[in-house]
Image 1 (cartoon, rainbow, N blue to C red):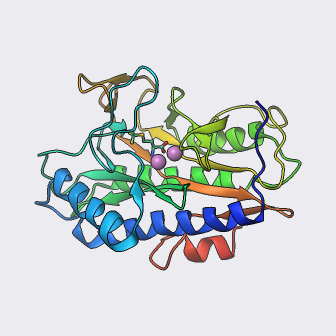
Image 2 (cartoon, rainbow, N blue to C red):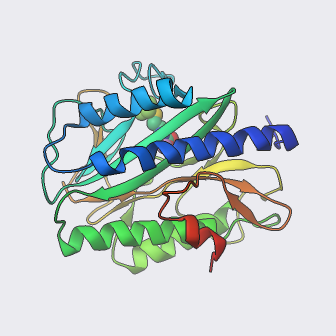
Length: 268
Ligand code: MF3
Ligand code: CO
Ligand code: CO
């Protein structure tokens, strides 16, 4: 099936969903401190989405083929957890790094975004991994424009991450997004420039590189969801939902508190 380009009203709805997803991260930021559990972060985000925003937490009961329903409203991936960490009784402690991944549905459209948080005092190595991963995401975002190709995004991310001595998780990728949580196309975080699908104005997709400090291999935990690095090295991820515009790119998952707000105004 060809990729559906979003029309004016659909783009307007995606802008709202994207901003709301980012606002959940703004809301939760002051709570991400030593002593809180990931389950408490989930509950706070859930209540904010449902009661304050009137959004639906897309992860809750999400059940792609071959999976069991996801039991929580957000993903919390700590240290060597790569993605899809399931909130629970785990207490955050100083020195942890944690990714909070938020996907909301508003008026039928999805917004999907994640950020890394340093809990208390993080090590220099952990900070560097988080910073380079954010740079890698932005290197990908900067490639987005009509006429460019998916391989341009992957190649830019790969170059930045591998150039810093890190490795890229291959098993998970960015994705088209809209009325569906995970739509076509798959947006790989590695690749060759000038190859792959040509970007067209009206496409909406995520860019969400998962970067490991050590080797790229991953494994799934017995909960059926949480993904960790096989070598237990640290892993980081940042995610935005973007729109291909007539002239370039618009980052849809921005808000007042987004650390990327200023940056997107001056993308280079
Ligand atoms: N938000 C994740 C993504 O970026 C997907 C999480 S699926 C869940 O694609 F079920 F684990 F929530
Ligand atoms: Co996503
Ligand atoms: Co996400």
